[in-house]
Image (tube, rainbow, N blue to C red; front, side, top):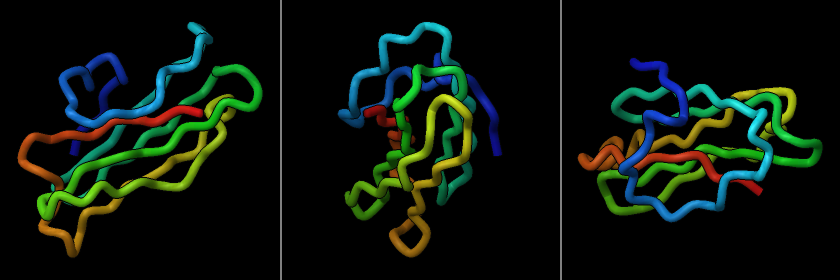
Length: 95
C-alpha cells in the first residue's frame, strides 16, 4: 500500500479531466494491487474528483464523484478483473 501526493502520479496512461484551476487544492492517493483511491481538499466550491484505474482486463473502472473541497475518498476497484494493469495506470479525474 502506498500514500503519495498527486504530483507523484505523473506518467499515468489514462486520459482524465484537467486539474481544476485552483492551485490551493491538494490530493492524497492510496493504492494496492486491486484498488486505486484518491481524496482531495481545498479546491474551489463545486469541484469534484473521482478515482480512475485501468484494470488488467483492459477495462477502465471509476469511483464515485467526491467533493474536492472538503475531502472524501473515491475508489476504483479492479478486483475480479485481474487487478490493476501492470502499467499502474491510475489517476484522479476532476469536474
